[in-house]
Image (tube, rainbow, N blue to C red; front, side, top):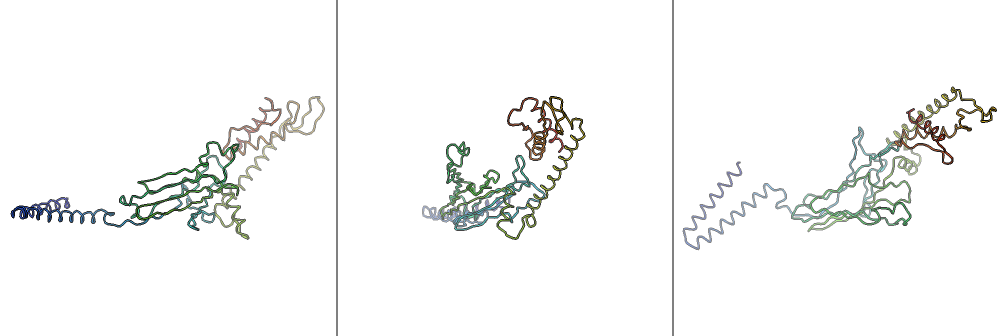
Length: 337
């Protein structure tokens, strides 16, 4: 409100000034218009300098900033720097190593951090700077042959460019990057280019993504005399989790064996009626122990790792009797957890 009143007062003063000069004829009118116009422009300039942050500030050449941010809610959402959750710069390139932060393999487990690309400083992104940010995901250097599954609808077989004219922050989804368990798998590469009327900057971003188990193995390999389990929180948590699940599985197998040992069919006969070897489950002329135990273990595994629904079947000659027996064992193993 105060600003509005001040503007009205200043305009009234300029009008009075113009009326004063206009009394001296045509030359006075011209001189008054020039003085009033210059004063008005000066006032507008002063107002913009005081109230618009970018007005009057010089445009500077752009720079590229990278930051890692967790993409998940966790009681301990800190990144694990010992496993490489850091950005290093070398020879003009950025190198990033990410882990999925999963203690064990789960269905749809994705805790990989995102990479935030931002143009800095603010003076490089003013509207008058006419800045643009271009992000190109580079194609694979060693393209798979046509018979490879990777060649089917794989966008990494060609460059993919995203250009941003009015937005100067870009987020790379860490969970959408390919894993690099094997040294033969190429890291994911991006070319980042930002430019404005004062200059430009270009960086190559090289990203390696590892599951936690592989990152822990590499830590032990790259740090002789050290133990990832002892020194890295994620590796220790993963090892403790696997120890716990192994013990649970061992107890479940003991319960399974005990159940069949107490069953009336523990000792059975063959189809001719003669005594056969000791068998916990003899049916339809054969002993099912080994296959049944495999199906039971498969049920446990699927319950732990999220693939319930895939029954275990003997690969050859598994008729309906076979399927019924193995499905029952599978469901029993699954329900034990």
